Length: 117
Length: 115
Image 1 (spheres, rainbow over the protein chains, first blue to last red):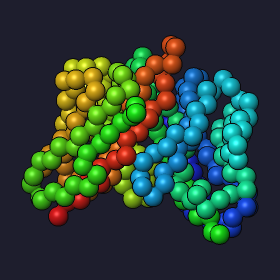
Image 2: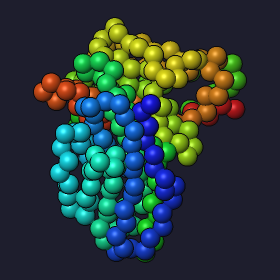
Image 3: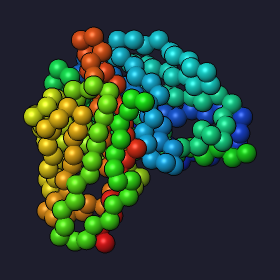
């Protein structure tokens, strides 16, 4: 069965610390996408990254970086030099194809990150 | 600005009432979705639509209904048959990225509370 596990329910750090959010997934598909979304207190889901299952290159975007390892079915997210504005719930998600233009996103339960000044 | 809007932001419903949540997008996306989020949990798929006049049940469709009469609009009705409707509802849409499904973008959500 398709599944996403975010074992860390809540993480608290002090500003400028680095923090890594873990994501482990299970899928029977050979082609799939992995995502990270940020949910600030306002509730809207903000897209951060999409990764194709055939592309295992790590990605860096400013203070954010992602480590995709198919061998361990993990797609971890690191925030470098965290800031108070990074405080949010972060969701990892896995796509499951429904049709030619629709996917179901299978979400983990989220990790709440609190960054203290 | 292009995006997805949902209204209302907060909705209160009495037991036994049907309510309709609005979702509109001006991104020219064919595909639209409704997800439900319960506290401390991830999102679960209620309904999705590939194209106008088409929609399919997701994992938790019981007690919900949808319509897709216009490309821009995908309203969700929470019926009295839904036993536990209090939740946060999020609408999403996506286009196509060359030959594959593109990223889903989400609206701001509607928080429904049953009194």
